[in-house]
Amino acid sequence: MPSVPPDPRRAALWTREFLLLLGSNVVFFMSFQILLVSMPLYVVHLGGTAAVAGLVTGLFTLTSMLVRPFTGWALDVYGRRVIWLLSTFFCVVLAVAHLWAATLVVLIAVRMLNGAAFGVSTTAGGTIAADLVPKTRLGEGMGFVGVTMGIPLAVAPPLGLWLAGRGDFAELFWLGALFVGVSLVLAAMLRGPAQAREVPAVRSRLSSMFERSAIYPSTLMFLLISSFGLVLTLLALYGRERGLGSVGIWFTVYAVLLTLARSVGGRLSDRIGYRPTAIAGFVLAGAGLLTIAMSHDLPMLLVSAVLYGIGYGTTQPSLQAMVVGRAPRARLGAATAVLFVSYDLGTTVGSIGGGLLAGAIGMGATFAFSAVGPLIGIGILVGDILRRGRR
Image (cartoon, rainbow, N blue to C red; front, side):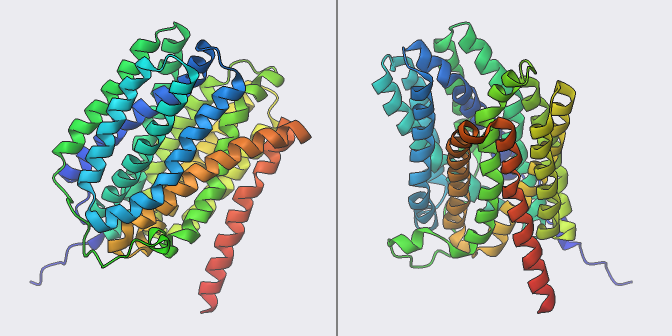
C-alpha cells in the first residue's frame, strides 16, 4: 500500500528555537511597552512639558527608523544571531541608564540610544523569525510572532502607569531592565541561525539596504500603522472630549482581540491567500475607525475596539508573511528592515498628522478621515487581484 506523503503545510513550526524566540519577544516587548507609556510622566516629573514628552517619543522612533536599513544590510552580510544578542544587551544597559537620567537632556540622549538599540534588536529578531518559520506556514508563524507583541500591550501599559503614578520610577526602570534581561537570556539559548543563509556578495551601497520586493506590502502596512499612530495620540483626549471617562479599557479589549485575530488570521491567510485576508482585515479596521468617530458612549467605543482589533490583527500577519514570502532568503534582513521602517514611519506620521488634523477639523472628523488609509489599502489589493486574474 503506497504511503501518503506528508502535508507540506504541516512542516514543523513549533520547534524549540521558535518557542524560545516567542518567549524572548514577549518579555522584550513588556520592557518596551512599560517604558513607552510611562515616559511622558517621567518627562513631566523632570520638569518638561507635553511638547517635550512628544519630542522624547518622536526621537526614540526616529533613531529606531534610521538604523533599520543599515541593520538589514548587516544581517544579510554578517549574520543574525550576534547582532541580535549585542543589540538586546545594549537595551538592558540603556534601560538601567534611565536611573541616571536626572535631566531632560540626558533623558533625550538615553532614549535616542535606546531607540537605536531597539531598532537593531527588533529588526534582527524579526529576521530570525522569518528564518525559522516554514515557507508553507508563513501566515500562521508570523501571526504568532505578532501575538508576542500583542500580549504585552494588554499588561504592560497599566502596570507602567501604575508604577509611574506612584512615583516609583526607579522600580519602573529596574523592571524594564529585568524584562529585557530575561529576553536576552532566552535569545542566547536559541541556537540558530548564526549566519544568513546563502549570503550573496552584497556591496555596502545604499540600494543594497532596501529590498525592493518588500516595498509593496510594507506600503500597505504603512496605511494600517498610520491609523494606529493616530489612535495612540488622540483616543484619550477624544474620550475626555466626549465625556466617556478613562478609555484605558479600550486598549485592553483591543489587545485581547488583536492577539486572537493574529493567531487565527495568520492561519487563515495560509489557506485562502494573503490578499483576501488582508482585504477583510482592512474592511474591519476601517469600520472600527468610523465607529470611533460616531461613538458617544463607552459601549459603542468598545465595539470599535473589537472591530479595529480584529481588523488590525488579521491584516498584519498577512502583510508580514507577504514580505517574507516575496523576498529572496538571503535578503530577509533587508526586507524585514523595510517592513519595520513602515511601522516607525506610520506611527510617526499618524501621531503628528493626526494631532495637526484634529486641531483643524476636530477629533471626530479626524477619526473618520483616518479610515481613508484602510480604504486605499483595499483598493490597492483589489486592483492587484484583478490584474492577476486577467493574466
